Amino acid sequence: MAAVICGARIGATLAASLANMQISEQVEALEVMAVDPMRLLVAPRLWAVTLMLPLLCGYADVVGLAASYYAATEQMGVNGGTFMEQVRDIVHLGDLAAGVFKGMVFGWLVAIVSCYHGYRALKRDGAEGVGVATNRAIVHSAVLCIVLNMFMSALLYVR
Amino acid sequence: MAEQQPAITLERVCKSFGPNHVLRDVSLTLPAGKILVMLGPSGTGKSVLLRCLVGLMKPDSGRIFIEGQDITALDERRSADREQLFALRRKFGMLFQDGALFDDMCVGDNVAFPLRQHEKMSEREIADRVAQYLEAVGLKGVQRKMPAELSGGMRKRVAFARAIALRPKIVLCDEPSSGLDPVMSATLDELILELHRKFAITFVVISHDTAEARNIADYIGLLYKGELQEYGPKEQVLRSSRRHINQFFDRSTDGPIKVL
Image 1 (spheres, rainbow over the protein chains, first blue to last red):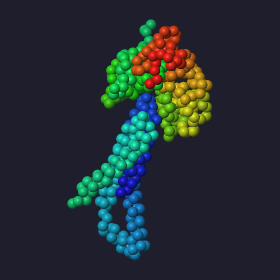
Image 2 (image 1 turned 180 degrees about the horizontal axis):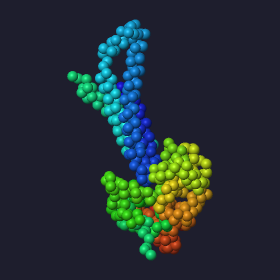
Image 3 (image 1 turned 180 degrees about the vertical axis):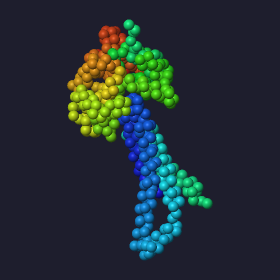
Image 4 (image 1 turned 30 degrees about the vertical axis):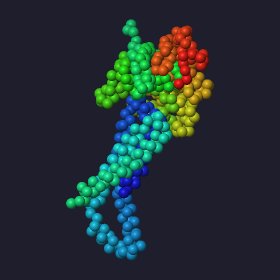
């Protein structure tokens, strides 16, 4: 869920920035300056999202746990110690590792999809092209993350 | 003494987008160190020609030689060719119609960008070079401003400073005077002439402006409906009896050039 939410937000930013560079000829300017736009624009974004989304997933895990603790202890009257004991019983290190791994895969997927849509925008599409690229990046990233999550969960958790 | 290689040679260059033939059999030779002003109404393939020259677009047929090297033979998808293409592109500077400045960089970083990418210079040397070029385009002390804070004319001049930062052999200018007031256009023309005199840079200037052609050109070409209607040294073209060229220079609606 964290990957889908963050992915959509990050993907929109990536796609919009690249599409804007395309329609304003900034990408062509790079090519004329003998600079590879893939290396300068796409590769760092790909690495950044792939490496940072797992950290965001870890952060979301911590926030989720804290929120659950608050809800359980303050609203449902569960003893704090009992809650933590239950958490230790149910949540294993492998679950956290799986979450981080999935975050990495989703980060890579979101970056690839968003950079693809942003990079494909054409000058003639104008400002509308930026909107279309951003929209496609959000929708495709979210759908692909959800579908991929089904398969990955099946592989990781079904024994 | 060996004859100097032409800066640019086009041999029967054709380019189409679907049924739209943008360039038809365009051939020309531009000697090194000359200024070519390519005139023509909007939508007649001038910008496409410029993009073909620098390898951003590949012609459907025909060949383009840059200082004797065939740029059309290079396939950007092959890594060996890509290296050669990039080496060839380092001979170029290009002024885009709207400047194409990097939005997220300040003016100083925009002009410094090609230097940081390709030259082994210290930051101090780069800063000096940036200041020198910005002063040359009449924009002293704007290094920290962002492109969004500049007027259209200022953006164009910053883009010009960036285009010449690496002291290229050939500078391509896509409508440098469009959207500028007459004084600013004349200033940019003066700048082109000064750089041409100082560094013997070859310029290809795409324009609608016949006054600009008269002022700065060594060679003039006229493109209409993708065909090169006229091309040659300025004096020869201005004496031409061809109706296309006369209509264009007389700013007349009466003639073979029709509004598209």
